[in-house]
Length: 80
Image 1 (tube, rainbow, N blue to C red):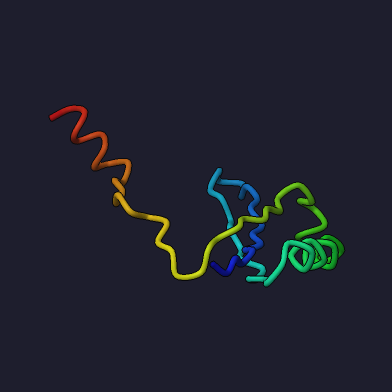
Image 2: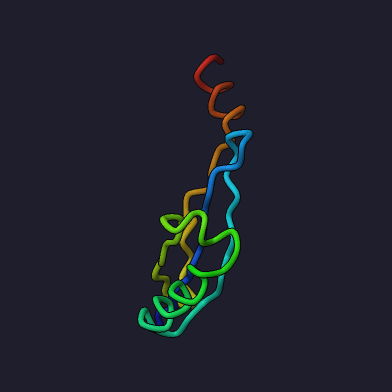
């Protein structure tokens, strides 16, 4: 299987919401690390240097295989 490496940056906004950015999809972990190194010096990213993450995924493999519930759906099931 072919692996790819997704680079994200997440930081908290003043209203407690998360701001998530996908920086890119890379063919190796080393290239993903280099992308982070370049982005660390850019405006915004430099103010939140701990917000970077690298996630490894297999091409053509589903990752959400059991669905999901939103918060309100989960609360309804708990109360209902």
